Length: 50
Image (cartoon, rainbow, N blue to C red):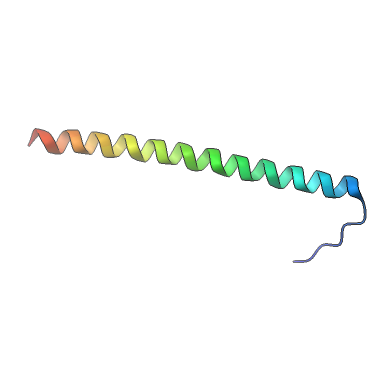
């Protein structure tokens, strides 16, 4: 999709929104990664008991 932006203010607003979305995605990815690491740790502990 191509959007023609006619004002600098609109461009700045769009860029801020996309930057915020990028940060939100990164934070979500980090949270998911942390949960996966925690689960892997629990699985390893359970496997070492056997």
